[in-house]
Image 1 (cartoon, rainbow over the protein chains, first blue to last red):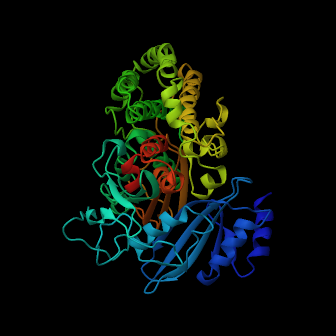
Image 2: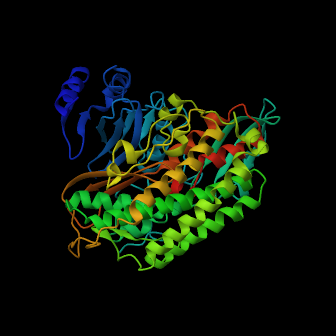
Image 3: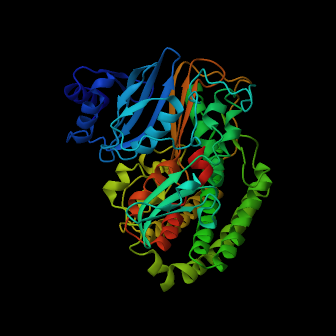
Length: 152
Length: 371
C-alpha cells in the first residue's frame, strides 16, 4: 500500500482528523477528546493494525503542549505519527494503556516530566522523580533549578 | 520508600530488591509483593541514575550532545552515537562516505558482540556460576583493546559524529580484528559446553518468565527480548540503515518466549555479528572517513526520527528543531525502558529465585532505562 492509499484508509476511519505528509511519515492531528476512540480504531481496523506504540512523548511549545505518538504495524510495517494539542494550564488526555500496554510506563514518565494528566490511567504515580517531588515539571521550558542546572 | 517493607493486610510480604543488589547490575530498585515465595507484583522504582539527558541536550549543540549519549546504554555506546549522528545527518541532508559506513557497521557489530559477552558472563554469574564471567571477559577484553586503539576509549567511545566517524581506523585494526575472530571461533564452543548445554542452567531457564508474542508487541519489547517470543523486530532487517541491506545475515528468531529462548537469541546473534564482520573486514573501501560539514551545525525547522538496533533493541532518537543550533526537544526511545515494563507481567506467579533469571535475560542496563 502506498502512502496515498494509506492516507485514504486513515481518512475513512478518522474523518475529523487532519492528515498530511510529515518529514518522514504521515502525520495526523487529532482532537484530544477523540483520541481514545481513534486509537481503538487504529489498533483494531483489519487493514491497518497499528499494534506497536514505539514512542510516546510530549513537547512543550510554551503556549501549548503537544502529545506525540509514534505508531507502527508489525504486520504491514507502516509508520504514522499522531499528535494532539493540549491546553498548557490544564493538560488532559485519555490514557491508551489499555490498548498498548507499553503506554503505562511512558505515560507515567510524561505525567511527571510535563504534568499531563492521563485520564483512566491504572496507576498514575511518579516513576523516575523521587517520592514527594513538588514543584514544576522538569522537562517544561520554564523549569529552573538554580543549583543543579548548568547552562552553557 | 523503605517504609514500604512489611506485611499487607492480606498477609503478603513486601520486600525490596535493590537499589544495591548484585543481581540488578546497577541501581534498579524493585518493590516486590510476595505470597510465601510466589511473586504477586513487581514494581520498579526508577531514577537512581537519572541525569535528565533529554533536558541537558536542549542546551548542547548538535556536535556536543552526542557525547552525552554514550552514557545512556554504555554497553552499546557506538550504537547510541550512531543513532544520534544519523538523526543529525537526516536533518542536514548529508550523505556519508562509503568508508565511514563500513567502519560504522564494523564498530556496531563488534560492540554487539562485546555487549552480549558481558551479558552472558553476568547472567551465568547471577545463576550461580562464576567461571563463565572470566571466559566472557577474556574475549571481551580483546574487543575493548581494538576500540581503545582506534577510538581512544574502551567504553564511551564517542567515535561516530555527524558526517562520518571522528578519525580514521588505526593501521592495526584489520589485523587485530582478524586475530580476535580467530580466538573467538576457537573458544565459542566453550560457551555451549559450559552454560547452554548444562542441565542446571536449562532447568533454571526453561519455562521461566514466559512472554507471548502478542504481549511482547503490546508492551513495546524490542531486540532479543521480542525475538525470543518470535516477534520480528530487527531494525537492521525491517528498516535497513547504512549498508545493512547489502549484507548477508539472518534475523535470529526463537519461539519459546521463555528465558531460555531469549538466551539462545543472544548466543546465536553473536555468530551473526561475526558473519557480518567477516564480510566487511577485507572490504573496507578507501576514501574519506568523514564528509565535510560546517563547524556550527544548524538543523532546519522540523522533526527528525532515526532508529538503530542496539544490543538491547530499538533505540529511537526524535529531534524537534526550531532551526537553531541546539535541539528544541529531544527524546530517546530507549529499548530498556520498554523491556523493563514487561517484568511485572512475566514474573507474576513465579518464584522469587526465578526473578534473577528473568532480569538476567531481559538484559537491563539501568542508565539506559533512567536516561
